[in-house]
Length: 112
Image (cartoon, rainbow, N blue to C red):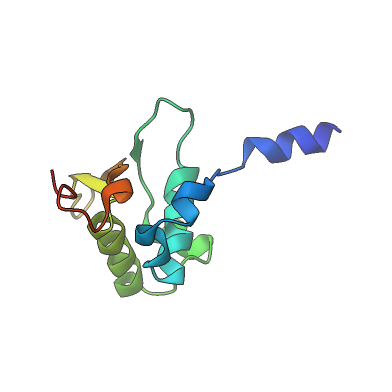
């Protein structure tokens, strides 16, 4: 029973509304996996800023190339799952904010 409790600490819940949403079903498979690992960065329910580096993505087998990783990040922003806060740079990490805009994907108020 002790090991079972530890397993739950590493769960990344993706609810039925999200999984069946038009925005989520439109994502490529590698982008869906990347999103789960962005959520994995959350330490508590109040945290809304997340980071996933390319080296982490490679370690978790999310993707093998930098270009695939970049496409996944752009796709998550485009479909309303993440909003960019800091684009990062040479030695700085890109920081994203978890967004619920995916709920309004394909609606006229999506970009509001």
